[in-house]
Image (tube, rainbow over the protein chains, first blue to last red):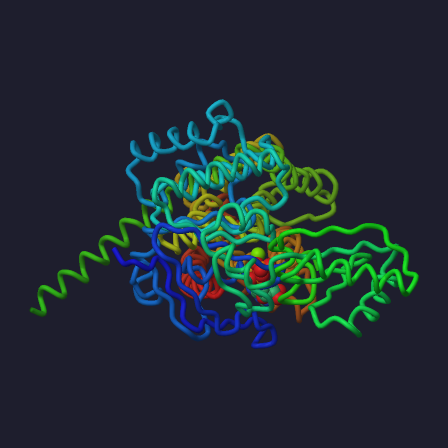
Length: 315
Length: 271
Ligand SMILES: Nc1ncnc2c1ncn2[C@@H]1O[C@H](COP(=O)(O)OP(=O)(O)O)[C@@H](O)[C@H]1O
Ligand SMILES: [Mg+2]
């Protein structure tokens, strides 16, 4: 099997007759056995990438290979190697958990007896055995997500696509799902997961691609990315947004570091946190701006995103 | 060399036909299970034609005298047609719902036959229509409808009805694939179905309609089906042949030949 599980070259995709540019010459590779975290805000183009790589959608231009197989000409072989858990738990509400899994197994062309044993196995693995004969309508959000993940695994895929697997889940369900994903990775599955949560990418991914407005704006390991954007972040908390903007204006006069205002917090990216913090405090004090708090921290992925795009991920 | 290639293509075709059949069966089963899990939906969609039977039989019926036939015998074939027509709307609604919920998206990523998604839907609705037709038969007999021909002829009429319902459900497949959601699919269906049902010979003779409407009402496929069913069920009008049955079969087959490829094309374009 090819070293590269995914090899994407200059893929572009537009919607609405060219008016919406969802992907703009996106390129990246994912090595077999690793986890790629595709990180970006709503509308960045994450789902579009997943849909193209899972053969649901055709790109306008560019090429992609899955395990060395060309996506356009060998989609039928590729479909057998991949699994997909889409952004919205795509399961039949009226069917029971067991019926859903058997259906997907049958449509993946497993024999009837194999479909049944595999479904029971997956229900056990995802802690759903006791709910297996209940219609999905009665499942909680977390249970649905788990069933959705189980459904994407019926064919023991070599490459798994997870589109925002934990969006909308409570913290406990999220932890459970993370565990399941980590277990799959340990067993050798290559994973491409999209997320809006920095913590999720940081925790699960070996490689992170930050995408915004259809463009790759950063690509590296979590620590690479952090290192690239300074070693510390000074967060100065002020009374309100106005004083944060004022502080920014004053500090800008004497310090060349990158400054970002996020609501009432001013963030300063630096390689020399404590010393710079002192300078910043002096300026704030000299201009009689009220200080509400100060914090020096290691940069999080949130900060990375702020640095790259000038806005927070929620925007 | 050529024969080997030919053999290979042939076995590939055999294989895809085999998977089309298997996948269609799986999807059909899934849709039917879904229907049984929401019996209210089936109950209310059957209740509607029952209400129509009662309305026309006991409220309007006495005001619509038709020479040479009891109104109830005139009415019930029309009710059958109306019921299968209205029932086929659910094909579009079901598909739109599947699209909305992302299930179709998942199907598209599976190595299954794409066509089976649509076939499984129309065939499930055909099965559902068989059940509905049986219920309407019961209701019809209860309000005084009597077969004036033979049981074989009556069953032939039911088969004609079911064939038509299957054909027309391919039209609603296209509606379902076009609509942004299931509510819209429903709303979009009625402007299509109302003129076909009511500007037809289903409830009143077309002779009573104004000239401009009469032309349409006489030749449109629903009237053809109603006329064929009426002739097969109650031998009315007695002096015409069974030609409309043949005509109706042609309409249905023609509709499948045109609508099925269109639906498949639309499905492949639906992202
Ligand atoms: N089927 C579609 N038709 C029109 N626009 C679309 C379609 N799918 C996605 N888009 C647009 O493409 C952009 C990227 O969408 P998407 O890939 O879903 O982003 P993400 O998954 O990162 O939230 C968005 O602007 C979205 O509105
Ligand atoms: Mg998305």
